[in-house]
Length: 356
Image (cartoon, rainbow, N blue to C red; front, side, top):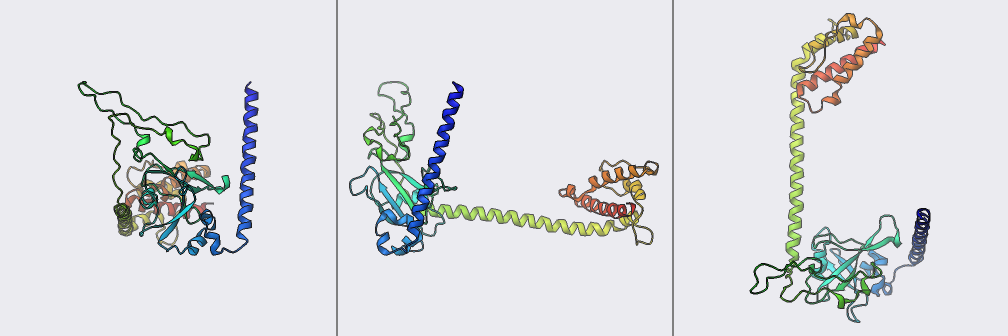
């Protein structure tokens, strides 16, 4: 039974993949044949074609630069509303389009649920899918330079968002306490979730007697734009403040390192170089006296010259010292520790070249 079920699932997955591939190839072929001819004014006269022509449709219809074309249809509207229509959405300086902006400028009157045409990243399903937005401040996807909308008219007594929110019933008169929270019944899903046009609005949720539907606050488009611009400015100011603070710390750290390098220069040079200052001391001498110049609490144990007689012991001790003093391990350490680690690391490397 398990083998049969697995085989059936494999066949279904293969069939779905083949269908997806052939659908994409067919639509790509249609797009190529359409792109082989120039765009005429009568081509964009029909609203059904504007998104397929992209920015050329905006130019042909005289859409201003600070606006975007929105193609829409009301799936369960009157006969005239079901035809594809177009309106120009002014952006007012906004960088992106929100659901609230579309709702505030939507030509038909009433309460609607919107779905938007969004491009797919891999070009599957013909290059686009229909998506729902969760809140009024969510960004609307842009498709070929415009916005594609499917609008579903909701009942007059049902405010936006109320269909998915539980409603608390009021206490009955003369009864102490409250009834159990009443939830709005929801109609079953349509056979094809991508097509809401088949949804019967007679089965739309309704409120129980005595329960008032919540009132949706009127949308102030100017206020939404101002809030968004203020939020962007606040985020920019915070980033700039962090950048300036980090820059100040880096400059202060560099200045401290220069001062400490001058202060510790004599001690570190006496340890690392020969008396004439021309060459570095032999590696055994540096490893045997490294405990005198390394920073406090480093964990480095003094090494006697007797332990460094064998070449293998010298290499082993050298690798241990290099790992401890590597500058990358002290990026967040105090400035003095960074200076000492850098100078010791360089001296050991230069001296070890002669040992090889």
